[in-house]
Image (cartoon, rainbow, N blue to C red; front, side, top):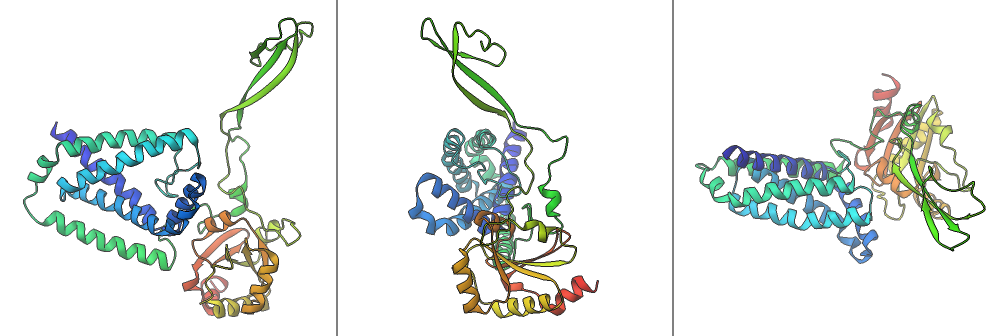
Length: 376
């Protein structure tokens, strides 16, 4: 029985640490997920709280996980763990039933599971939390030194340092489809042997004699019996999802709506791609460095473009105000937020492969680009 108690505590702690860590190193990703939930639930008035709630939720999970793992102050944290699960278990049931978002975001982008899988996972972990709460005094009595407290506080300090760094630069681990090393054309392709979507068709035919509308399957619908039945309606239900490429919604559109992404993702030369999902919210603190790099790139025959979801006329106004020498093209806002957690952020590609990504606080100089890529 003691083994069950300890395993419950350790497993609960490890999973909460993992969940809190992967969300903590990607604070903007957590904020975007809260934004998705608020929009789906009609809570647009709560959008202002998306970022702070993302930070708080990630740290709450991480702190509870650390306390469980190190057996620190279990009389308090065992109840916090149970309260956490008591709130999120019914919430994830509602999400599984209503499906307001397709990805719950419980493990950030590091591990994507379905809404029903999330609910079943929570049933297991609320059980583990109950076991720990029932035995909280037993755990507390096992602590004979200050070591658990010292280790927990030390881990918290490291955690805050990593989160602060990830906020001011880029996440230290990139779990998204556009990470460095990804070849975009390959990530957009579908293998020949990939699973296909499978649908179940249900047919409704009306009996000409009785007026009754009856349900049939593809195996027994009376399409040949035109004397007694006439077609009434049909519905298709997806029973097996097909393969979806990691990148499936990437476009680069001109102001006229023409998708010209192939021109850039198949370019054998270097392509500099500035990503600014919203020019009204973009930081201009590094604009002079961006402009200098753009001039250098274009002088050397390299493409330098900006992708944004801002309307073309407004993009032109931004270019005039900030003396931006590069062209602006349109892309979906969610896609741009997925590409890089910085507004603006910079990518360098060659042959469709992402070679480097930078936060606006770390825009490289032409000399740094030459040293790292051109003259390697």
